[in-house]
Length: 448
Image 1: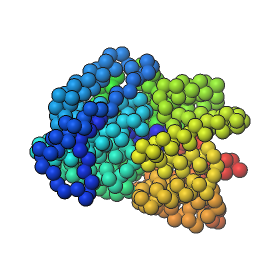
Image 2: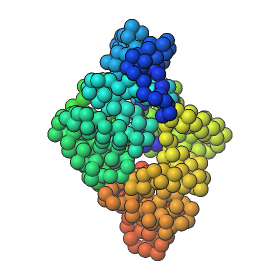
Image 3: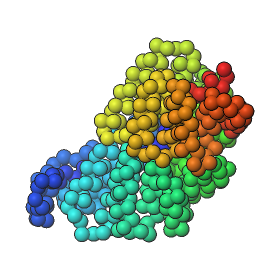
Image 4: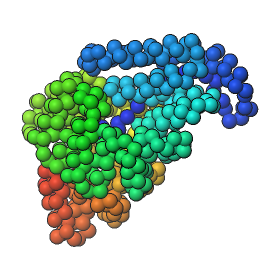
């Protein structure tokens, strides 16, 4: 399973100031300052990185950045620039360490506290709103993220990053025309790794996989070697190659990442997926376990549980699935919307299609135009034998002419079940041609 799956998404501080409730009267700036000073004895800690992901001097630099921000805040709790720097450190650490439950709530709290003081500087207001949008996107709270990004754009419309957040929010909410417009604006301001990445994703959404690969290559070229953002872009490039069934190119991309970041867990897990597709299950297991040992990324555990099932190791799979439920609950408890992850696991690992549909429809209520949400709902309905409802969601999932192999597969299988065998078989063959290594709850139906 992709993390942004990869997805998404994967993506993810404390200046403890006075918290206002809706019923409280407005306080003066002097009162806010006094409350701030009185309540800043504790700050969120920077969690220690394991040795595997310290990445040379990078960890030393991160600790220094955190210490500088912490010391500045202890001297002056209303040092907004220091607070912003601390938030940036924590968001970056969430991406690298996978400790979303610790870092994202703390990031949102410090941002809220900064905004509660109503800073006069529009630059501080903008930075706070921009970071708020980024965290909310990582937590899959897309409506809130969109509002934060819009507020940021009203403060400063010539920042490329805020248009990136707008792009992401519009994509997730299924407003693809506005997403394209926001990405075009972003590119016109600053064509860099972040901009090319958005263009790549939109091209993939609109069925132009070759164009998506071309744009992601530009993103990788625009990044600094060894930086986590560059590694993520190259990982996404590898995922695109995999979606075409080009395992050699994907493997090359993942190995290149490890030359610069030897313990980049996402690349290690991706290589495990390549090994599994090639039938080397022992190597796949070794690599997935290594990735799990580096960071607690739920997608790695899901891959490993699926591998246990494929090798008839039910007890080990069941034990791991229990761990997965616990990890997901921890994310939910920290404010992370995990409906899509629950749905995918119930579909492909557990085989409980009633629960899969339940989670798909919860998310559908939130964002009924999103093509990925509709695709999962269609698969769940298909597996339950409700082909008419499956077809309704297939139509909504197909509005961008996506060539996603899963979508093509459920479309073809549903057409067959509804009596159009010629179209169904043609579409199923097209799906397997797009990605001959596709493996999910639908592929058993293809074989049968």
